[in-house]
Image (cartoon, rainbow, N blue to C red; front, side):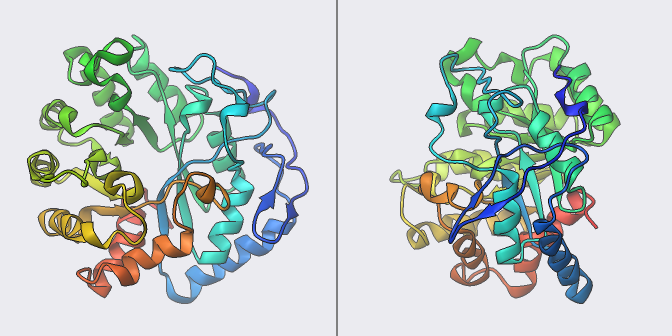
Length: 341
């Protein structure tokens, strides 16, 4: 494991442009730049005034310092910084949150930094009142349970993200690990540590995950992006039923996120709202979470809606969601799940 997460360093001065933040992306456990004190103060004031949580439960950030935070893509050995179309630093995220009234973000380790979760760790150490973090660990590593304990107990991560979707149809050695009995030790460790597991998973792999959920009913599970179901096909229901089956397990939450990719349609995805409504009615409002993906100008680089649009999608565009449930989906559910304050 990298030792750089234990170092004591300073964050460089932020430079703000008209619509984006240019930054060095270097975060350490000690330094906090002065321009962001105002951002933090504003968000703290918002919480004190109305106690409304707005929590982005799916936020990818990555560093732009190749030496301190190298690219270590586990599935693409030739992947480099040149293959990344935009900066997406924590500084950019803080500015985006401040401008849109988002109080907290759950940082999800990006695949390009691989199994080295240093940047996420340094980010949550610098801003512990606004971030929680999920790392990545190799699910095929015989020591995966110990790796979970290392990142959670020693470095403060709240959980891990696993991506069976990269192992579907035999890719990267296949997804046998998903429900194999040797994985039980990992899940038992998660229960002991009270961690949250994220799953970036194909719908065809959901039955294997359901088997593990039945075996470990006390492990908290989040299914990302409506399980990447393809809503653009003639009839998504056969695959959607595999996701709806998880409504029977109270330890499973679903992220209403990445509608751009699952619908293959432009914002605000009106044609596909009835499918989201089906999930909403099946799971109920207490087990749905809101998330977006990227901060600031990185949204445009990845052809994603702006943060204001993502908020409007839940608050205004999806007419079937009641005002009380809007607050649950946008923040209260996440606040309970990740014990935010």
